[in-house]
Image (cartoon, rainbow, N blue to C red; front, side, top):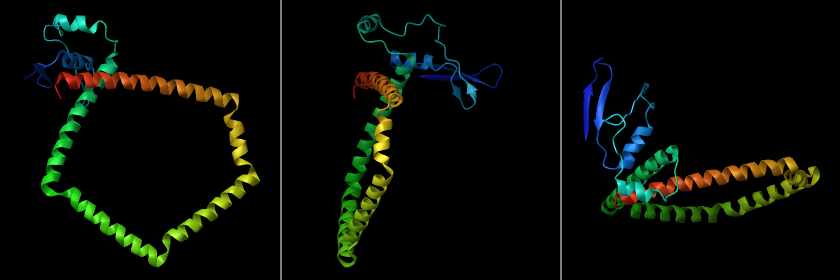
Length: 197
């Protein structure tokens, strides 16, 4: 449910929005002060803060669940919406493909192109020439590496203390990002399962 009305200054609008799920209302509240089309939006509960966004049993069941940050909650909502959208797009695309036969036509074109390429290769020996060129490049690169000791220098640099510190930093950063992404994914999938998809 969405009710719109022009504000008294006749420049902005106010909207009263009802949400199906408490998590959607919480997400909307987190978007207060966000910029939309060069305007800052203000999001407040309908009764200025005393609105109970969750049923009491939902609160009890979530006390044992791991806490997620506001950012993770917003990202989980976006993830769930994208997941639902992609499911619908895939189903629609499959239905259209079944009717029109795009996949079958593409397979036929691919097979014809493959036969044409094989025929051209038999005449011009493209694979053979490409292999010869690759082998020549490999030999030149190997000679260059041996002369300038590039591999040896890189290996020494990679095993130095500064390189180990940098590697450790990025490993820790990657692990933190991975953990946060998993939290968002898990929360998003909970939202998807709440919607019964």
